[in-house]
Length: 178
Image 1 (cartoon, rainbow, N blue to C red):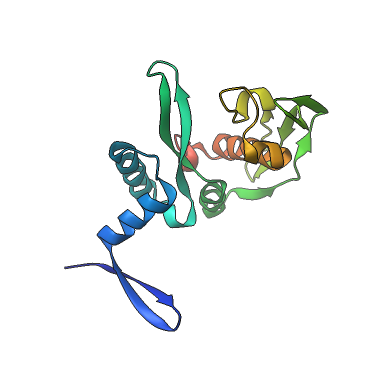
Image 2: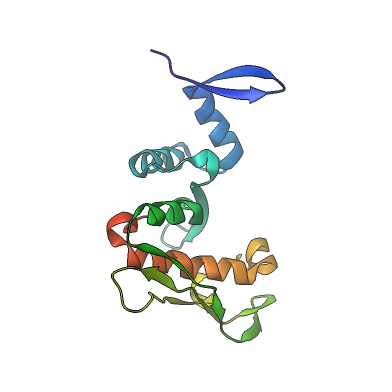
């Protein structure tokens, strides 16, 4: 049986086969990925029920110093982590991000650290994971922050703290998903 996805476009119903969906994903979100890297992301997406069309999982290039080249690594998005945590009856929300002092490095002004408290009904205190810019900021080969980290340094650092806090608070739901 051929499975079809239906997409409404300009009041017409368009049918897209699974193979066409895969090609669309590869052409749109994984242009630089090898076939093996793309297949790894798709296998992980299926295993953890993450929708790549919603960017719940995507590929991020990382420099592999052993291979001496950039490799694409599957990474789950913050929305997937939030949705999975929200399914747990012990999830009790989270607080506002707290930031360390601003510093000027990597070609931009950014907070030194961020911390987002995550609340769990069974814990007396919130889970707080302080993450540091120097450990998380995505940089280019010259050491400058990439465009996203330069233009949204607080947002990016807060997402890292939040994701680490969610993983620590709910390891049975989120452990191992990076």
